[in-house]
Amino acid sequence: MSIEVSGLVRRFGSHPALDNVSLHVGDGELVALLGPSGSGKTTLLRAIAGLEPLDAGRVTYDGVDVTDAPARMRGVGFVFQHYALFGHLDVHENVAFALRVRKRPDAEVRARVAELLDLVQLGGFADRYPDQLSGGQRQRVALARALAAEPRVLLLDEPFSALDAQVRKDLRRWLRSLHDRIRTTCLFVTHDQEEAFELADRVVVFHKGRIEQDGPPRQVWRQPSSAFVLQFLGHVNLMSGERRGGQWVGPGDLRWLGAPQGPDVAEGPAVLGVRHRDLAVRLSAQAGPTDWPVTVERIATSGWRSELQLRLTNGELLTAEVSGDELDELALRTGDAAAVWVRHGYLFAA
Amino acid sequence: MAGRAKVPRLPGLGLSSTVTLLWLGALALLPMAALVIQAAQVPLGRWQAVLADPRVLSALGLSFSGALVAALLATLAGGLVAWVLVRYQFAGRWMMDAVVDLPFALPTAVAGIALTALWGPDGIFGSFCKQFLGLDVAFTRVGVVLALVFVGLPFVVRTVQPVLADLDAALEEAAACLGASQLQVLTKVLLPPLRPALITGFSLAFARGVGEFGSVVFIAGNLPNRTEIAPLLVVTRLEEYDYAGATVLATTLLGGSLVLLGLLTRLQRRPGQS
Image 1 (cartoon, helix red, strand yellow):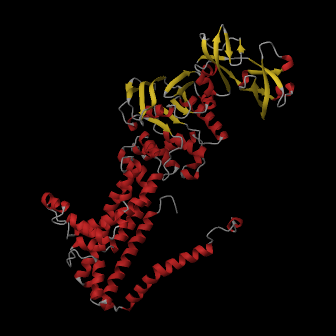
Image 2 (tube, chains in turn brown, orange; image 1 turned 180 degrees about the horizontal axis):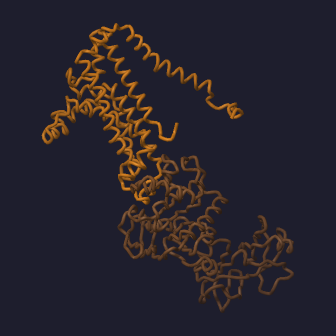
Image 3 (tube, rainbow over the protein chains, first blue to last red; image 1 turned 45 degrees about the vertical axis):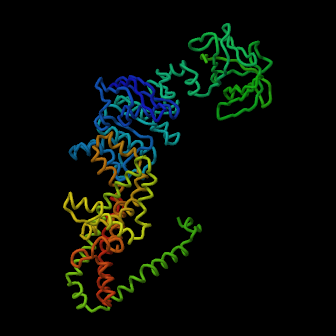
């Protein structure tokens, strides 16, 4: 089923949680709504499900306007961050809930629940109660429950955020393979960019109640549309300066002559963004004429990669990420002088 | 497990069990035992005579049935009040929250007089009921139930409120997304987890209602065979120096309450738990 929302507005007091949001989700797509907390992504998901009253805008399913339809008439499957399982019902009856309220015959309910519990690999857990399950198991019960009535769309609100790192990783791979099998249109909310990028066909980035960027994961990663997106994706140095004569000039006469990734910006105030991976470090002796001289402030090693905190002559602090081998080669220590150069940089008008 | 049990914990099993037994024994069991011993000394014939008295039967019947009906109404109304207090934000909510406890603090006689003034034939509500519904409240059994609802309500609100506050609002949303109607959300999702608290509140309101005296006697009018409650009849018998009669009545009240409360405790067990 395809979903179209147009001009959605939702205010909490004077604060707009959704500020004129429009989005089209095609049939069978798996879309991630990504953004920091309070950016409006959960409000949009709830609005699509019919759980959130709207101040303006329309929601349509396959071209049919459902804006005023209550949640129970919409046929959506919704998975909540904290599972929202019915504690007084066992796993079987939790999964059967949607069929019970539709008064389906008992034999059909049993067959369907058994099939769903197999699907979420909880075949032997039918008579357990939710408080006897681990977090990952509970969320899989919640998924089976949401799928029971064959929803036209599956909506997941930060489904894995309450789980351990390893369980989270397993469950999201499992969800991806599940989606590949059942091809139900699927939207999920996350603040974890890794999760969004690994799982989704398309990533929609939210900022202050608006859609900041919308595209396939690789495109969002390679061509962030704004300094906000670049920063939100993480591991980046942002420096204010200006575009002047085809160069970027920063404080302390810092200059960068390279061509930006993505579109260039006009002359004037501009922010230079350099991912930690894209800030290359070399010894002062090998420094090129346009390199920036730095002092090593701190070296933090975690596993196979190391993060160097580098102080520029103008006082700003930059972070560079190097591999363990690179660090060995450089043989740098805290307090040493070194030089950096920008491998890839992004420019945004400030 | 054995190793864990050795870790000393405050206040310690010895101290806490001593306090518990002492409290149960001295404050609850001893007076009740005295009553039972007294009752055992009353000859069987006297028991039959006391309990055969229509006035006694009427008073016992009114106390039990009035307390049951009032507890039922208090459970309905108290459940709603708790719901409103937990789920809605509105101006003056803290005040409403505080007012719920008033029946606890108000001397019951004051409450009784106030209720009589309001619901009596000349009172604001009383005259309204008389004029438009043709219903007398004060000095009838309706008045008795009204007073008992008044004293029972806070028990229900205060037992249901915290449980309701702990219920995740997402449960209702989950049920709605799964296609449940509002009635189904209520009966299949909200009431089952609230059931133990509702039954506890009902039990407390009922127990209080059986023994309630001060708030009832003013509005009841105390007409023998009609609006006289059993606790009042106990006092009347005592004033007549009819200790055997008072003992039989009190023991019957106690026994009846015990049986009903025991049944309610059994009802309270959650399905799926042993």
